[in-house]
Image (cartoon, rainbow, N blue to C red):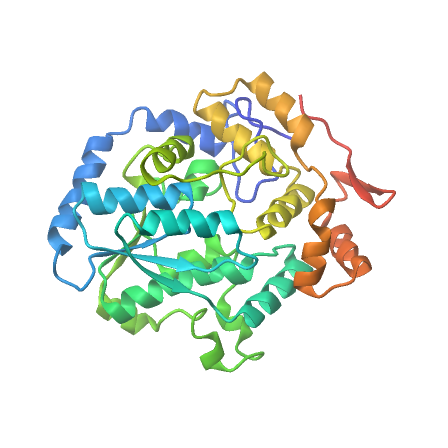
Length: 365
């Protein structure tokens, strides 16, 4: 298995490519960022904001969860770019108490917010279907995070939606968005929800029941004339800096212990289903939550490659046994059915099934 010579990311990551020098696209981008004219990009955003400010009920939608990154982006769009912000929250399944409290603390600092709770039964059914068929237990939620922002921008005539990072650019994958500030619904479906168009469910539910999942008509979106972008296009993205900012300015709390499957304790604390999501990622592609975190820290200079190897060998693919009863209850599955799904999606080139557990047959060094 080819790995990045700097950060450990393997070739199995979807859409991953390597330079002739053996760097993954994320590490290549980390080097390019050092030469990027961020002042020029910020001026580009400032000019856009100057052109839209005050022309609609709200100037900009920022999707927020109560997490570090969305807190940071919302603050900047409001206080640095002087926009009237509508924050929008899509309630995650099995929402944690800590993310609820963090969101409450954030909103009390002065933000409008619409909290959207898509039908929990439909969310669960889509999540279960995608877990069984694709090994993607959060797709019902992540799909809604995208579609609702397009829908609200269209219906409320809000000219800008600002997400956080463009994950393909920052963490490895397609390089299509490196120099492109905005994207459309087709790209969101193709890349961010792995080709899962919510329209595929119209035979299972009434169209009205899927309202929050279905994107607006193309003609309506063109008439609304809005842009959807990522903050990481306009500023050098560093999630650790965002955590420090959110902690110091908004009282954000982290987990009381390290997160399952990694050494970090402050990111992706919305729902325990994220633990299953990254465990499935590990079984399918051979990299999990720890390697993902460690690669970010290597690129930022907070970890050496040797330190990253040590952490990854210790934590990546950590068993999720503690949470299995939660998953069984949520998906309404038996333990046998659950582990059959696990085994079905396990990459047989990377793992073998041994005594009821996936055992890796590759090394990281």
